[in-house]
View (cartoon, rainbow, N blue to C red):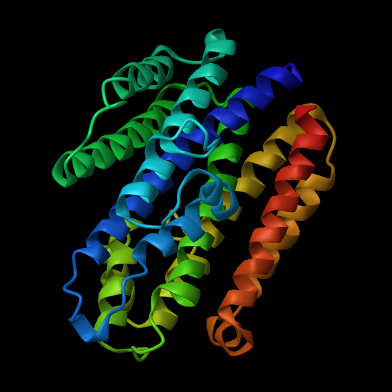
Length: 314
């Protein structure tokens, strides 16, 4: 396979996954913002949290004067000036797909191209909160349909492996960022950990990563931060967990290596990080600092992305 084709497949999947992540972050912010201001002594920082998790705060400052629902939703959903907005993600995914049209199945192309065409009907409209929520649900369905199309219609060859590697590395980054923002930013200083607001926020995060039912199936306990982190970091049975993403990454990078007859830095880094996750203990992670652990993981995950690009995509 040409490196250009592999690059387009890899980034097509990453941008489709990123659009889904942005929709989930904005949906979570809407749910949390809907709480009464008197709830548990709550102060309003949901939109700053969403921006910190999913956006570029420095770029945001050059475009908007205030951090609020309207500006953050516009920046993360529709701004053409934000290269990671939902609009930009779908547009870039469509351009990548168009460049390698013959490498995609009909179902994958129809999903991305149809999403781009439908997205244009939302632009320039002043959406009500209900309409914006419907838009976010639509974005999540697009990502789910694309992911399912890839899984159910692609040949299990190098095109499929690069697609899955892109999905896994982006999903791991997104899960880590959601966890970090909740733990580090979202809970106000006036509210105690384990209080009613803390419980509602963790519940919202679980719902937004489609893990609420999974949490109760696995732990059969009330919501506890350490157990939420355990599910989303170390549990390999949870599809969005860091452990699950790295199991998928190692598997598909190894298949690529076998197909091309050469292992390299990307296989080494992926295997090392998977081994680190498999040997980790959530109590020790909390004792040494969840924020520090996640920041280290994000840096290593970015390093793996750079290694994949250097090894295969340039």
